[in-house]
Image 1: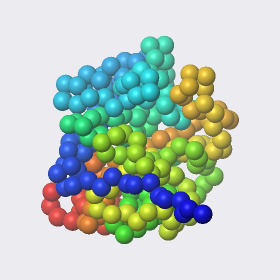
Image 2 (image 1 turned 180 degrees about the vertical axis):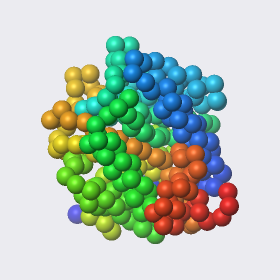
Image 3 (image 1 turned 45 degrees about the vertical axis):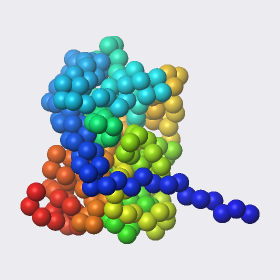
Length: 278
C-alpha cells in the first residue's frame, strides 16, 4: 500500500514575497476604494467597474476576470449570498443590505486576494455583530500562522473564536488556500477542525485565509448560475479574507495596508509588522 503524499506547497523567496506584497497592497487599496463607494442605489456592476479601473490604472491585472469563465473583477455577494456573487447591472444595493466584496489582482505574475463585508446604510445589530465576529475570527486565524505551527492550527483558531461568540454557522466546503503564482494553490485551509494537523508552516509559504460565517446554519446551496453560493435558510452571511506570508518574525499580512500591525498588537500576537519599525 502506498502512503498518500501531501501536496507540495510553493515556498517563496524574500524577493517574491515583495512582489506579492505589491499585489496585496493593490488589492487592499482597491477594497478601500470600493468600501467608500458602497451606498444605497449603486449596482454591483458599478462597483465591479470601479475595481477593474483601479487595478488596471495601478499596474495590475484582475485575477478573477475570465477565471473559469467568471465575468467580474470582483465577487459581490449580498445578504444570503456567501461567496462568488456575479456583479450585475440589475443588482441594486439597498439600505440594510450586507455586501461581501472579494477581490484579487496580479502584479508581475504574483497574486493577492482579500475580501471584506460591509454594511449598506443601516443594518441590524445582529448582522453588525456577525461582521465583527467574522472579521475577528480571521485575525485569530492569521495570528496562528506562525512558523513551526501546523496548518490546521489556523483552522482551529478561526473555529474556536467563532464558537466562543455564539451560535453561528461556519461554512464548510469552501475555505482558504495556498496562493502565489496562481490564485488558488494547494493546500485547502478549512475554517474549522482540530489543531496540530497538516503540514508544518515554513517561512516563505503564503496562504489566503477566508472565514465565511452565517447567522443561521452552515448549510449552503449553489445557484443555477454555477457560481453564487447562498445560505440554505436565507439568512445573512459574512466573509473576510487576507493573504499572508509565513516569516520567522511572524505572519506578514500582504493585503492589509499596515501588514496587520493594529490587529496583531490588539491580540498580543507575534507578527512581522511588530518585529521592527516599518
